[in-house]
Image 1 (cartoon, rainbow, N blue to C red):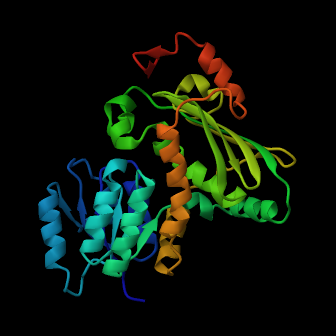
Image 2: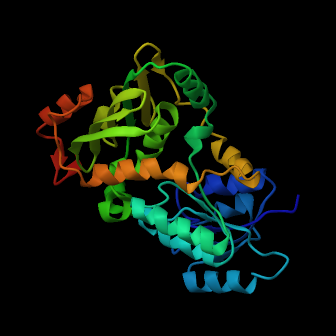
Length: 323
């Protein structure tokens, strides 16, 4: 198999090293990377000879010059802020490369339609990183759930502690990140559709800078969900993250481990032509889009047990930020 030549948009971001490692471990090479920030010393660990650009125009010019060379870039990985994903996927397809995009692929469902049209026009492929679908425990759970007709009651709790820096970054800006449900939760909503089928009810109980909560119904599950970046919600858990999913009739489902190699598995699947399609991405994008826009309704559905404590904590916020 010919060496896969990659480029990377967003080399200074948190998730970029996982993509570099996946490229390396799957026998790929990084030709060029772009980021407006120059704190990209991590590249030395993986691809010290890769070209690096802080100006997008020069990055684009380099890719254009290489388009018909033996080292033509075959795929561009996108690790930029959420609101730029669609634009960078559009750019990627226009260069004649396939896209490998971090979550969320797009901010609105109609963006998916536009990207589908571009796939048809260019003959290139959009692949999204949905690594939880490749987690062995989640695949096993899906097979178990799909084998019967039971509708499960599920509590999903995800708390990942973040400091005040978060609110000064693009991640803390709803216009650029989509808010906590989009930035933190989109993988979990996708996982729920993967395991329990299509969503049929979507109710939002709470939406704030540091947490969100609501109720979702799927074909085979009724889900109370709670997301938070406030360390007060850790409930004494060790480390910086609390991941818990309790499923009636099955018990507590632990998927806190086994994440380490999932980007590498994702790249292997993409190389084999088994990347996740736009149709597979769409349900989670529809869920987060509605969560951002829907009016709050605390009387519909069933509330997550953590929410009562949040609502009772009058001293929780300092101008919308956790104290």
